[in-house]
Length: 426
Image (cartoon, rainbow, N blue to C red):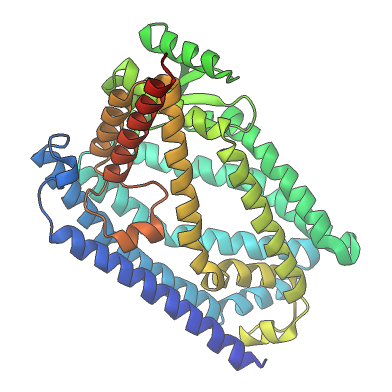
């Protein structure tokens, strides 16, 4: 394949991805714009006011996504086709940088440039769009401090990691990519411990959940499930946003973390149903399967990289003078999505299946269908999630079933459980 053919193939797939995802987003926006009020399946559960605010928020977020998606696509094309990356590579070589130093400098500067390009969108999203709907509670000072701390964390972790990647590439022979995979897999597992213990507390305060009915309920819930954990914590999420959620973090004996906004708005039964859902993910090994899938994807990516790295045509197609690991990584990270975007709906469908399984586990553990349904409705309302998603858009993008689908599934599971109990009764 010639260099022009490589560029033509990339552009064809890139345009296809952009056109398909933009069309789906426009379809979803038109679907939401044409529908007012509460969907029939949610009648009596959602107020008209919440439904209208959800609709307005969906439209605002979607229109913003159209702009940022187009800007992101344009930035990718500029970086790949304008000659900026080869020019940066030559400038670093001209400055006397070579080997690992050139590798690290090139990728660090590229990452910094992409990060800076996203600053205007982040500012608009936080201080205009989110503020318009009452979600933003971040001050400019906190926003700047978060970005500064994030940059320092990325440098502290990323720069040594880049030097290590180059060392594996240059010193472990033809099977460098297998050695590198083993190293990166170890790093990923290590970060699952480091993030909740060291990194997350740099940005938020995590306090133990206070004694009371909610703590007693959650402790009993975890004990009944035989679920070992590292404690129950409340994170000061309200410092930055009014959104509400709960999550578990870590691979083994994870921490159970509740947003303070959730603790303040939900009853003990509702919060217990949410936490039981999260425990269900761990009990069913959903989290571990996703980590395994991520590692498998990394393995395939490194295998592809090992095959592409010595292909001169690839570098000539995008203006580089010679093959190099840093050029290959840049091309793969910027342009690789165009070759694998079709995986998105498969991953989304897999995730939705896991969410329904976790809901069924919550029903078995917390034994309160009404509390789970009211918690789901409350979370949907608190976050102004789209009540009228287009089915094609949700099938492609949604990692969770829609609210109506989840409520219907809870009702079915509760009826099935009741029927089974009736048959088992003497």
